[in-house]
Length: 102
Image (cartoon, rainbow, N blue to C red; front, side, top):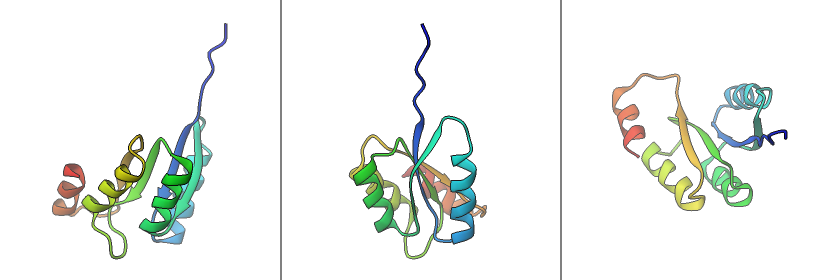
């Protein structure tokens, strides 16, 4: 009997086009991953989460006008089954701790 493998459904959010394209491109080429949406704003990300119920939201740590603890909370309130993974090119201890505590 052959096991059935389901793809991990992923939504990506970054306010920089080049980074958003790179992350979604890389993840979409990874076996077992399926991109269900890409967003440049929190509002767009919340719509994607509401409509597509991703397994994972991959979110930039810092993007225009948003603080990570609130971003993570809003995503989880909109789509409770969605896990939030945060990435960053920065190494700012305060923001990293805030994201971990969100």
